[in-house]
Image 1 (cartoon, helix red, strand yellow):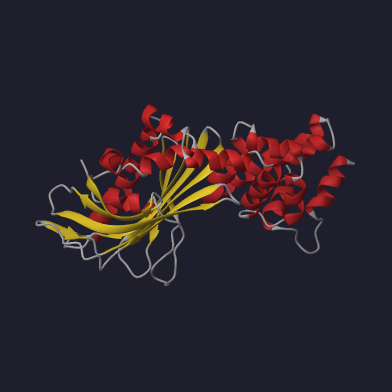
Image 2 (cartoon, rainbow, N blue to C red):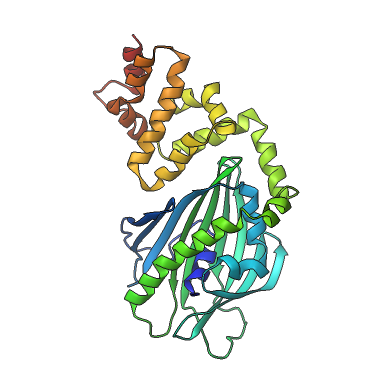
Length: 338
């Protein structure tokens, strides 16, 4: 069955989320974890409705996603509850205004007009599709359809390896009409998950894999990854988003073995860093990977390497920063090496 929340997801699929209401934000709560997809929700400020987020790593190249997103005719194949997407105006392939028609069961269908703007954060090897709802679009509401009252969302795709891409989807939507909040929230959570699964399958199909081989996006990623200094910048910026100890991070990004993990590695470290968005535990695992790799610059003694990689006090000092009155992270490493 289809649902208008698929549209929310699409919109979310295009924007680095920014709340429209500046009230108190609640914490994200994990609601589901299956098929490598984690979904979260939190109370949206000033509303009875919830804001949703999903995060996952998919076995597909980053450039494949752009090919899927730009194919409007195929949108109903992956966006849950989407009946049709029509192009209203276009500056270029990354900046469009769309009219989305959503096919809902039982209640009246919904529609909305959305402006999409794709930007690239090249210092983090990250693509961001920004979406904003156009409320005074001049586009007539089709007969028998109700226009969404509000929407905000985001979609971010992030390089993990050349064969893996991290995805984050975030959205909030008010479908309007007389739907009770509990029903909207229930459906929204599941439609986000369904859309996420559908999109993951789409980016792996031959049509988009072949198209991506000749895309500007591919040229962009290949250019970045061929520049060692840009790779170091990406790695540092990614790690500093989660860690406060710049001294240790600087040492790590100047370690050829760690930099090589970003370009030629299996992606475990970058996947752990990426997924740590919703998990302190995952971030600590990422720091263990960094420490285990970096310690090999100083010793081949596996017992010492294990001791460094599994030292909780050291891991905390990297994530939270050095604390007054305590040994610094550098001093702790040196003590264990000695």
